[in-house]
Length: 259
Image (cartoon, rainbow, N blue to C red; front, side, top):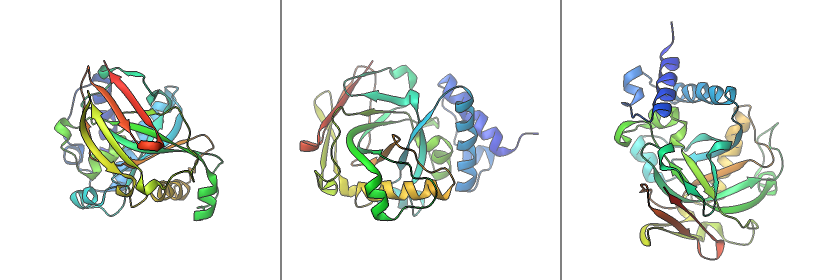
């Protein structure tokens, strides 16, 4: 007989495949802890790997203190990025791949060398970052109307959908990343604004938390993997036909079109 964790994982897989939203799984399947939520996510990660997908990075969520307070947690969460989630600047996003997408501007980091055996010191971590990139994260939820709690979003791979990376790598020391400002527009209208300091005080601090967490869980991170460090401002809903652009000033620009 399947456990509640297995049943919840199967429900989320089916919801994603069918593009049909479901009720919050924490209540539906009696999941009461974040550890159970990560166990659900791990089952679906294993299923995707068995289908031939590759893990190429991680995303960090809940990096705004206000959102942590709202969900009753005191740390971020994370999800897995698969190879079929990645898009590049000016690519077209098929809205049919998503259920109820929202977009946020983020700073992405690319790992330059493996972080595997032990939690890195701050110096080891910073020296392991190859470069940064402007990015868009397209979050998506299988939970109807985004009525999520912490267990629901963690189990649903931290509400990961797709992501878009800018073209031009940026040297880590070229900008004060906490001060980088991002203006997100939809069809030329500003829909969100924020800065790097909204992301756990500094995007690198969020990425450092993730690297240490991955080593603690025995997974580590490999050279070339992407870290999406968290939203610089509020998310904005999108639909088919929308043209999205994020302007990070001198740090760069990135955009996509939904079709």
